[in-house]
Every structure is written in C-alpha cells, then in structure tokens.
Length: 329
Image (tube, rainbow, N blue to C red; front, side, top):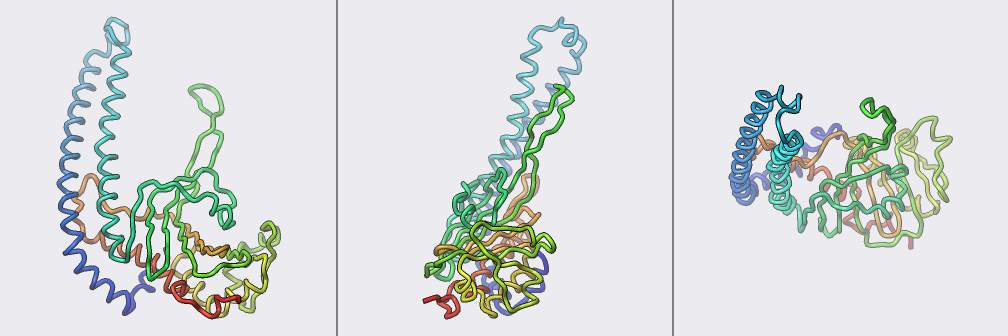
C-alpha cells in the first residue's frame, strides 16, 4: 500500500481515528486483556515443552553412540517421540494465533459496521474466474475474511495467498519433485451493487508493450478520452456503451486516486458485482505476536488503518450512492 499516510491525513480520517480511540478503550482493550491471559497460558505451555525437548536432546546426545551402533533398543521410538514433541511445540503457537484473531478481529471490524470474521475461508473461485482478474490462480488459500455491511453496501474483504507449482531436484532421493512456492498475496474486495450490469467491464493495470498480446475472451479493448488514466490502466469490456457509462471522467479520477494508494489495484464490474484485486507483499490483519504482549495499541492502530483504507474504496468509488453515471437505463 503506497502513499497511504499522505492520503489518510484528512479531516474525515482524524475524526474516525478520534472515535476509534474511544472505541479502543471501551471495547478493544478489555478483549486484549483477556487474550493476553490466554497468550501467557499458551506461552507457559510452550516453555514446558521446550524444557522437555531440551531434556530429550540431552538424552539422545548422551546415548548417541549406542543409538548409532544399535546397542540401544527402540531407535524408532526415539524418532517418533521427537516428532511428537516438535508437533506439541507448534501447537501452542498455532492455537493462540487462530484464537487471538477470532476473538479480536470481529470486534475491530464492528467499529466500521455489522461485520463477521472468518479464519482461513474458502475463496469464491467461481466469482474470481468470472471477474477475469485472476487469470492464473495456481493454488490459492484464503487467510482472513470480513463480511458485512458498510454504508448500506454488502461487502467482503478477503486476504489471499497464491502459490505456484514448480519442479525441483531432491538430492536425497535423486529425483525431481513437485513443490509449491509462494507467488504473491493480496486482498479481494468484493461488493454487491444496487443495479445489474448488462455486460462485463475489466480494468487492469497497464502492461506496456505486453498490451498488444493481452487478450480477454469475448472482451474488447475500450478506448477512453483520458491519457493519464490510460497510462496506468487498460480497459476491456463486452459492452462498450455500458463501459463508458461506468467509467465516467469522475469515476476515472476516483480510480486513479485509489491507484495512488494501492499501487497494484484492478477492477471488474459484472452482473451486480464489483470485484477489486489488490496485490500487496504485506501480510495484513496481523494483530498479535506469540512472544510479545498483545496489549499494543500501535499494532491495533495499524489494523484500524488497514481497514479504514479498504473501506474508503466504497466512499471513493461512491458505491454507496446511486450515481447517475452508474445507471445504464
């Protein structure tokens, strides 16, 4: 997310921040105190397992000669016990990580409206295909999801992590194997409109000379009278008239404004939906750290800023209003 601070220092943001400070004291801080007690309990369990692991490693080191020579019985049991201890070591961190998010993030989102939170959701793959913003999905995993209503607009915000399959040589087994490596991550912003689009219009980032070979099935390139906009985006649609109704000069200005905030942002208008893809290297909505106190107002303020920016898409694009320029009938 680029240039976000410059954009956010507005009277509206300052007012929202002041209200949030009060909301933090009344609603969020009490929950943080409960989560902190849980963190300490999990952390003490983690320390106990560490001690067991150290004792086990010491035992293995002391009896290493006998284990290698086979003089010691139950060599397989040693390995199994080690695996169990390592799994137990991961359990407190993973349990706390999920529990802290499911406890805190819904309350954080409720500041903006009636929202629910879901951990590791299923992504709407059919809608993502229909939007044409994800032409190479690879293997995708949902990480965080907020669903609800903001300024009378039904909206979902979902974090995704995309992986690609590669073949790598495994020296141990002397063969090539398929592995999944991280490709990119980002956010899906998905809103329902009060109207039905007759066609499909896709606004994607400009790819320079690659625009010549870029094709979208059943869509044609739309030429717009905005050189500045066309330096940043390319537009494709199967309904040229409707595309121009949607992409008025005012709407283009709003989209450029969002591009200044989210440098890698793309839009799709289809059926009654608006889907927006935002690529970002940052892992968003991280609200706690297992090894530090969860009572950290600076971290919570960062979560507030992330959600404020995302919800600003609705007000920036005027999705909450029945704009004349959004009407085709």
